[in-house]
Image (cartoon, rainbow, N blue to C red):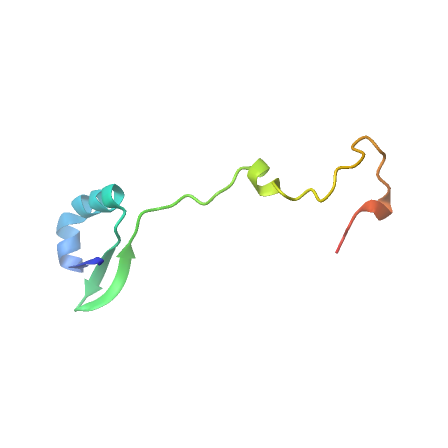
Length: 76
């Protein structure tokens, strides 16, 4: 279950709450006047290296040193 905390309480304990989210990975919901307004969540890096982005993009590799003509490119 997500922890809920008021904005005023978050302001007083922000660093402690952020460290807790980093350590446990559990989200914290910030409330304003009893209503949920924000979520503090752990950042997950979803960026990929250029090689990871290209992985699986080669459909065939039959003759790597053959010349490539203009009509060999799939422009769809």
